[in-house]
Image (cartoon, rainbow, N blue to C red; front, side, top):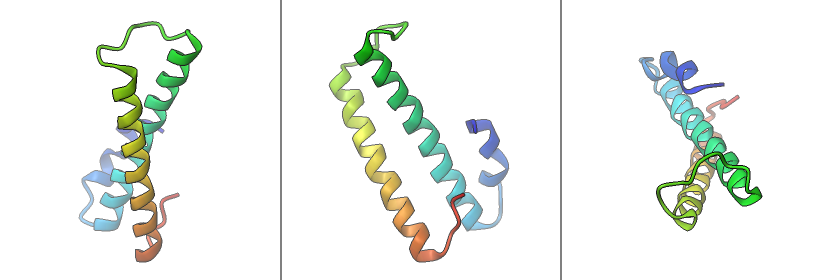
Length: 82
């Protein structure tokens, strides 16, 4: 799934669909950041990040915490994230 695949969900009148889009967008970005950090650590990243790796790792940590919050809220509210 790519960000473009979430557009219709974001435009929905249904808050549960917009919530799902927010979750999916964050997850997509998180996974791409994770993949970039793995490549950087392995020495196979094709560019040098403009900011420090520690800043990127901190961003990833906060994004992971936000995803967890969204998952718990979805469970409470009965929102299917799949």
